[in-house]
Length: 197
Image (cartoon, rainbow, N blue to C red; front, side, top):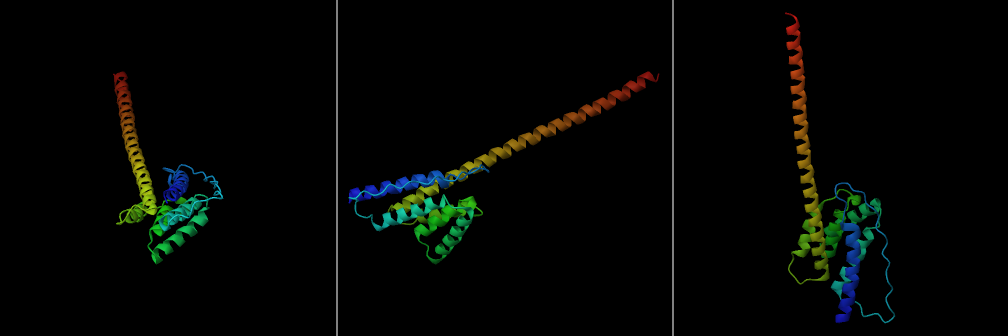
């Protein structure tokens, strides 16, 4: 039983790591994206261990779906987003909410909605119950998206502060130019009066 759980966890962690590297790290402030390279699956040995329990199977299927999203076109992602939204409407299962949350963080799928994605993941993580693989995945995704949201907010704050400083410098420059033009105009008038005597 322990070997079976360890094997399922290893596969799930490998798929999760690949997914997080490719999908969740959405570009910050318009940086270009590169498509994710396909992940090669290693075939199961002939003396494979017994199948994982239902929770582990759900997590593995979920990770497979999330990994697939990394290689899909914007049109396919929009279709996936629409289907995930309908699936959550029909059945608010944890895997359905995680799928929708991840698709909501992908700009290629349409308008990104990190706040809604975090709310969906929080509803999975916050529910009572044990630490199933699906809940653990939701917790990791929640932390990743929340960190990215904090980073984007910090970048926007820094950008706004830099813009404010730039505006202040431009205002100082304008006032200096205005002062210089006033002084140049006053000096010319004073010089003309001196020659008239």
